[in-house]
Amino acid sequence: MEGDNDQVTDLRSVEARKADVLGALEAQRDLWLATADRAGQPHLIAVSAWWDGTDLVVATTASSRTAANLAGSPHVRLAAGSPADVIMIDASVIESVPANGSPELADGFAIAVGWDPRAVGDGWAFYRLRPTRIQAYRGYDELEGRDVMRNSTWLEQG
Image: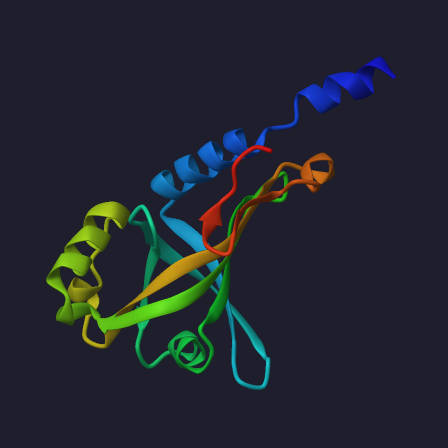
């Protein structure tokens, strides 16, 4: 049973998981974004994402299925990492703006992710996503205690 004790000591605290999530969000440029239409049909795309310290900002064409889903339901799920090191983010759409309608947002996004939707063509929009729940876990051993954010509030160790 000595190995079990070693394994338990390797489990990350809430603070360590939060720090790992923040590090990944600050470095991450690509996430998976899951939306659903009004009938509940799921849709999944890869998106570039900018973490501005509070929200994730993603861009997609305003005429896309994803944009239609975002307009129909403000609830989304984003994922980052691998099956061995997962970050799951439930979020709500709090704002959408045309890419050419907000120079500050577009400039921040371009600096963070390395490309500018305004340069790609017309019809792009930004969606500001506010995390409501964030989970972080490395394998089955970390499933318990995986929440690091609930109700848009970071959890503290306790």
